Image (cartoon, rainbow, N blue to C red):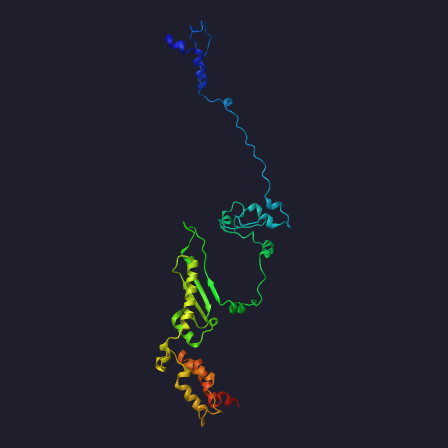
Length: 340
């Protein structure tokens, strides 16, 4: 016990208790500090007070909150430069837009939609507040220096189709996937006005038989869709190659095609049919072939007969054939006779 007193004296114990927050009061007699060679001073044990005293509570510091300035929209002038306020695409910011916008679902009946402040619905949707007419006009004026004059002779859609008969259609996609390359973006559609190829009758018939259902007779448009290659540029080159191959192959005349008879023809050819001889014989009754007054068969009658056999019988083809037959014989239609 003497050793403990020597190394743990009352002043040290009181300081340790004070650090832990205890208050102790001691009635022990004085102890001699043998190491220092003198007598120690009286130390009191501090009393442990478990009751909280109101006076011992530390006063809370009041948070200093700065004054919040009013929204920017309330300080904007009516003639301000909106392009400087909203120069580019960004999320909706209620304090910068001087418009009473509302969006969302009203929880109560006959209640207005939530306002623009603390409205997540307005932040979700994309906005085009940066594309106002004055800003668009300013951007167009800035881009004019990089543009060239519009070519002469392309003032209308008809002239553009005549000079540029080929149209290429592609699609780009924006999506959230690990890769930015969408599989559908590789598809290329090439449309071509068939009349721009300037094919003869043999070449056109051969090309139409090669392309099949890819040709629209009403609009005279040939459509080629390619999606075999992985890249868009590769599919475009493949489509141009197909059109080039079809054009050259259609103009090729095989040696055996010259020996084809009327029964071997895939379509009705009026020039090689006996209908031409019968029509010319009727038109030149009493004349011989080779005479100076020999009249050839009119092209309108030839087209009407060929359309009737190739396209099939319908009301239009039958009426056209009847009209040209009466004109060939020099007769008038019954309606014209009744009108006289």
